[in-house]
Length: 145
Image (cartoon, rainbow, N blue to C red):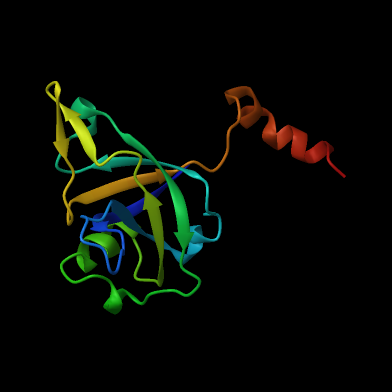
């Protein structure tokens, strides 16, 4: 897993409808990590308004990864500094769209609606290995042709 930068919840584009749009998470990943993100991967979301230590994390899935980078100067206004700081670099970012499984989060026994503009941190699940496999990886790499 690797951590993506601070991003926000935005309405899904749904032109020509009167129904409120479902919310999606818009994440931004630095170019050094975005190459590993693919549609369909699991994403663990932590909403800053609801501390994950108390309210848990939501699980979503990547639906799209932008094909061209976004310069730091073109990031969403009001979030540029937070995104650049979280990425620990002033490099191009790629927009990652994540489908949210639910539009609410359980808080103190009741469902609280997520709102557009909420900040979110995210982890993308990259690999699924046992701890033993991680520990033995260097030794196994030597044995491979």
